[in-house]
Image (cartoon, rainbow, N blue to C red; front, side, top):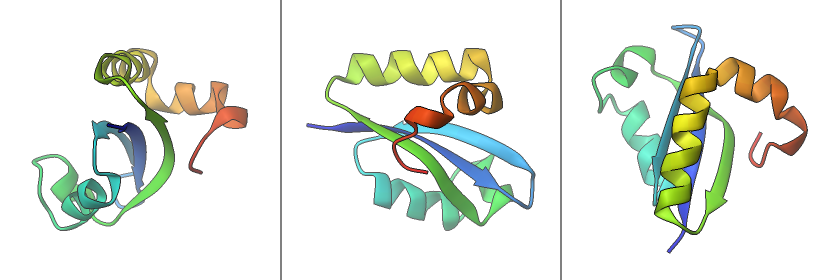
Length: 85
């Protein structure tokens, strides 16, 4: 089973959001349909980065690392290795 770590952008809020899921399309639809406390304020959300991993533990580790470093800084440092821009 594959898992995804993703970063989305809201022009309305000028903010990034990082999350993880097993079904990327469904999760993006949920963000853009107003589900979720924070993301409901930023519709529409645009997918700007994603990566696919096999182990849930790796997904949790990467998502936490991105949050700790800061999403913008993570993107700047990993612009050449982005999987879904």
